[in-house]
Image 1 (cartoon, one colour):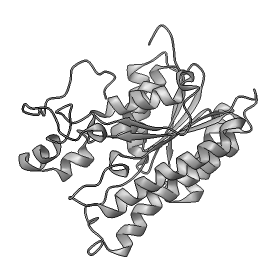
Image 2 (spheres, rainbow, N blue to C red; image 1 turned 60 degrees about the horizontal axis):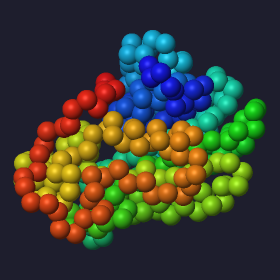
Image 3 (cartoon, rainbow, N blue to C red; image 1 turned 180 degrees about the horizontal axis):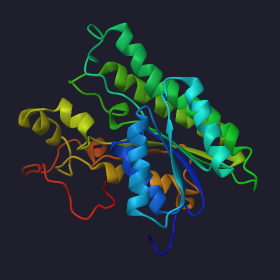
Length: 282
């Protein structure tokens, strides 16, 4: 564990905590001294995440797994209540869970059921996560409040000719909602920020980009010349969760390899190889 912990004794809920960004965040937050609630619709996978914490960081504070479907208000409410019951407070809420449905397409072909399914998970679930986290943070026994981090996306800022309309619209709404809530709650010490990942080398995206041509079509737009890694997003979330970001409020924090800053990208071939030494990794 690090010599200087960035989340000592804090209590953090991470939704979607069984895979991808969520799993890497569970491991990293625990390594940095937090009690972690790994919340996921797949309870068995969330339990595996908790076991990984124990195996990798035996000196870390306790982690627990909670089954949570973020599209159901009762699940999120119960998850927050479980965290407070177990640890006595809530300091960090990372509303990370979401979906990217393969049938999500353009305005003419996306079915209403796909739209509603996406909005319920990606937007309504974030709203409920904010709602119940704010209520819990207001009751922290020492008077300190907390940090809420909502996962948006670079597609909330950029348009693409490979549409996923419901996903894009949901993530744009997350940005707007986060900014508004950040302003509303800033003076009571509850900070809200959005994390905007760029294209990542996660199973979710790699299953979608299932040919070299599809991958290269994306990478040519990315100045970094590679897909991001889930651990890089977890490190961005760690910054927003920690007191290092105490004056960061209402930010659209882009961890995107430069894609949102680009007009013409550098010459040279992109790379599919990940960078080295980005531990922790499951």
